[in-house]
Structures are given as structure tokens and as C-alpha cells.
Image 1 (cartoon, one colour):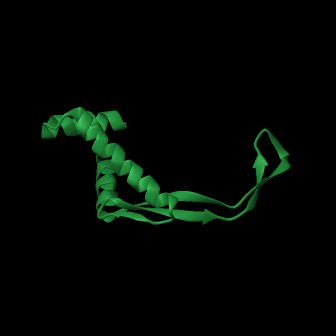
Image 2: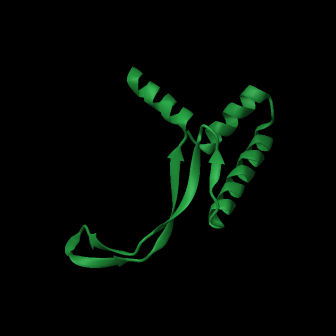
Length: 97
């Protein structure tokens, strides 16, 4: 599902113009990104939690030339942990496939 698909679906179900739905979705994503940039975590009950984690510095390998060590610096990454309801729904959906 893309952002466009989400906008169209919400617009059809609520009767709100697509442009207004797009603005709300974009603002929501902007605020989530802003919070993550500041190191905060973003939590949506039953959906999941977005966290910022610090990855340690390490040595990697170039897949095209495995003999060469490539230093990977310490950096921040975004981690998503699915909420209880989402995990249950995905698990249930996988049983029917």
C-alpha cells in the first residue's frame, strides 16, 4: 500500500476531499519524523512503536571483494516493534494463506 492508496481509501470512506486527507497524512508523517530526529519514540497503541537505536561501530565486508574490510561507523537507525494487536492480526492472516 502506498501513501496515495491510503489517501484514496480514506477519502472514499469518509467523504473528505483527497487533498485534505493528503495534508493530514503528510503532517502526521512529518511529525513522526521530527520526533524520531529528536531521539523520541513514537507509540501507537496496538499498532506499534518507533524507536531510535544506536548501532555500534563495526567492521563489514564488501560482497564483491570479501577480502577487504570496510569500517562502518556508529550510527542511528529506526526500529519498529509491532504492537500486540498487529502481531495477532498478521499471525492470523498467515494461517489462512
